[in-house]
Image (cartoon, rainbow, N blue to C red):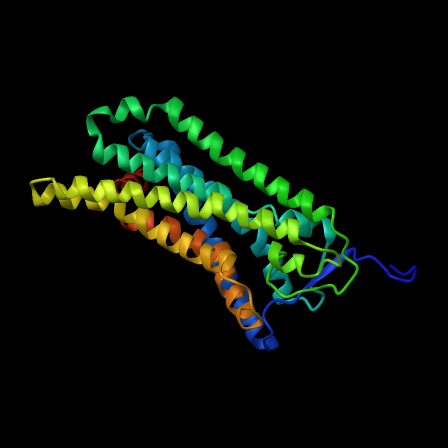
Length: 304
């Protein structure tokens, strides 16, 4: 490398290429979505903490999902909102690296734990309290967070070893790891190999386990004699299936479909779903489709 080559200390987040009026409009819309997602997930956490009827394994994992949604949105959205109304769209190197500490792995594994909880509840109801003890629930939660942290730390360490000597423009809304790797002026095959292995571990593996779980759940539900029993069993799984479909569908398109220039703008929109819309939709899905959460909210409102 020549002596006159300067090293990159900050990046420019390109974001959406829109008119100034449209960017201001999106700022207010996305701000409302972000505030709503914080309030909705905060409401879920509050209800689970205060209502003893919700102190069950299913809502224990749901509270972790709410924490992940708040953390993931707060990690990315404020900077995106600032960039929509600011012409200087730079982000320094260290905060950019911090944005690569994705919560993807933790959320995947928490969703697997939730599907396992539903599998035990429907397929082994008599042994449910023994199998899904608080010790098991705590172990599953700690394992999920630990795996997510370790994978994120590995990605960050591998990213820190790379030289970034220009250009500085990240063609994304955030410092998304695949977009940042394109700017490295060194071979990134190790990084890409680790990302592929991580995707197999936190996307393909968990999705396969959940498909097997729900095949067993479906078989158990079909053996239930009463229509009311089948309806109740389906209702306990429908919210989780909606969240799983949204999350894994988008994640696999973003991280496992081969990249192309035509897909760059589409990936920005899909990543926006992960960081903004998913955290907003998850509490809506679980509250609107869950009688216990709605009943808990009604009781809380009556006390006001």
